[in-house]
Image 1 (tube, rainbow, N blue to C red):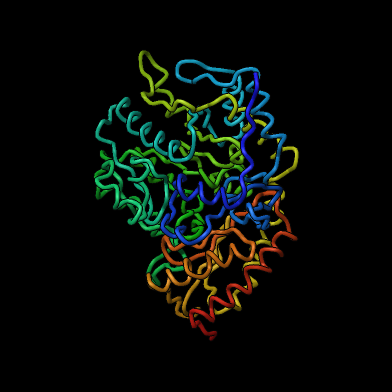
Image 2: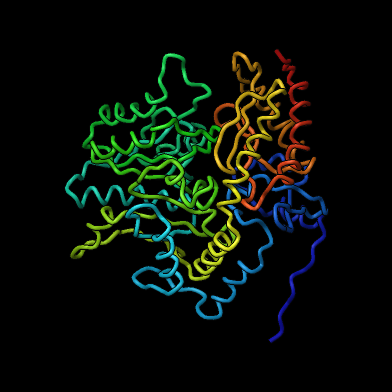
Length: 462
């Protein structure tokens, strides 16, 4: 049977087709009317290339997910090899060897008694699954009114309607209201802007106060990232998560560690809960589980949470068609082999101080305020005044981030995130294979651009 090879398109043809037919995610499509759309065609290691042959350092691991770097044909090949044996079968009622083996491997790596793995296609679905599991768990254990979830302000937990109810970013929620009811929010751990009268541990106590306010019999779960992404890599104060665990135990509330970004080496451990030494009831994961060589996510639940579903006629009345896809599971197994064989966790632990030090070295630039984060997950907050920490207003952020920083960083060969879901930050999340030479490359682009940004925004030194 003859096969038709796909047409080799010119860059101009790709631009025309993309602008006519492709709807990008979270993108201002109108901005491409008179501008080229970024089209990435190839990747190798920490770098990618566009259709014009321009080379970029991928300082965001695509979207916090290509942890082993680009161009690993061996990992992709694992999926192709699996397809020869079994291309697809569902995990609805049935099992197959790839999902069984992967579930057992994840359970062996997960902290404590997190031994049950429910696969999804990605991160939002993993969070959605956790929220649904929390509600049904409480119904099965005699607490049917426990439906609310407590999350943190500015936190991003996904785009499905349930996950969006936990997301704490107002402008992402408003277009889709009314949302799934039950989302409640408390302050995040932005220690850079902690009011002077507050103790950092007051941020944990805010969770107990909110549970009391809502009514303990109505709260099903607390969901938090180990390091909060939106807002710019907020880390917890010492003892924060241990206190959250105590609060959850006291009020019979499930603790969900949302690790869609923070798992699989991003913080230097397999799971962020290990980094900060706490034991959640559930972990949500995705992205780095396959290093994005195949779409996959998972909810990892404790034995205690799973127990009511293993009795009699009970079942978790939820499913994702492609959850546990055999090809994705095979890719995940090959991805985890790379983690082990190439000691990627050790690479992150060894080089984290160098990455942080590179960013800290730019504090002499007057627009640079705070440097924060953990592992290979860092943020640099920009300010109008280093001494007072005065931030930029909405119009100024538009000028700083979208009119200058985002296009200029890309033009000069660095892909990272310039974001203002909160105060304006630049986020860096390089592949876990990155080292000192890569940090020098980032520095070579970032420093002059930040100096120009300070001049452009008329930010003067002290």
